[in-house]
Image 1 (cartoon, one colour):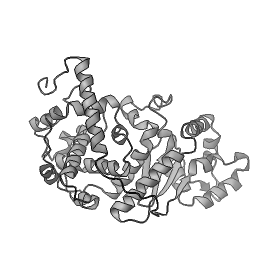
Image 2 (cartoon, one colour):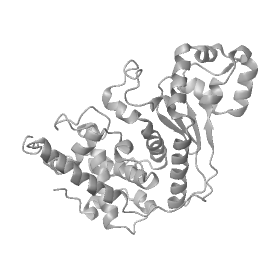
Image 3 (cartoon, rainbow, N blue to C red):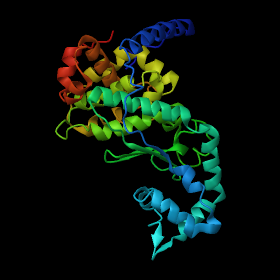
Image 4 (tube, one colour):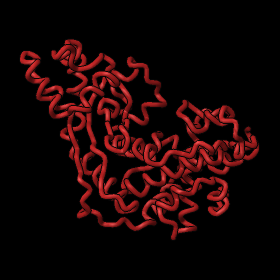
Length: 347
């Protein structure tokens, strides 16, 4: 292990490498022209369920909930039953009381106020999301985007889809890595790198992309899993071109720079351990999922490092094969084929 992952001799050497990597990464990020899609109509629908819910006057609860149910006939039952897990919003033709208690709870309202303070109207995030879906419509010949609904749900999933029609975004999961309530809610530090405000758009879009482009069930090999995750991250490159890489993958700056500095050693590790063509998922699971570090690698290594490597493979493939459309890329399910044609070989 020590020979595969050497240490830098001093801080100056490490700093110099970071400068080179920064220059290199900037060139890669701007290598693909960004089409102007500002006039592309995608039937955009962005709804603030969180604001509508917390605007409910609990003193006039029955009438207020009737209005909310009329505006969100499908989403309100899903929210109460599946996200909050408190049962249907209406029982025997009466609004159920547990939802009223949830809205009246001082901690719940304080969390909602934190979201209002951090996002201040969500104009920036909505603009990012709309442009991302306009670009997706451009690249994939679609003319409709999902209905995007923001909410808070007592630290439920950061984003979810209801088929292709709805993309739900949980605002309280993007209040910044150091938000005071995350430790008490049980979130380990390594997960909170994905909780920065800047992660909202990429994490939401990634959730929707995973629903639109699932990996085929017959692709068990590590190389296929890596490259598939790399393709999703590459789509984020094209749909959110101004977003920094760390927010697309949910790493800290230090973790991202470690990956860049040790890319050749990471690749050598996978080859030495004969993981690339491994089809037994338990042997590579920890390299494509969230975790504090990657087994067998130095402590500085982040989790899901296989996804990061897959990302670099796909980037290299698209640099060498620029005629490949994004539609064609997402139809290519053979990770070995993409790897071979990418000529990926970090040094």
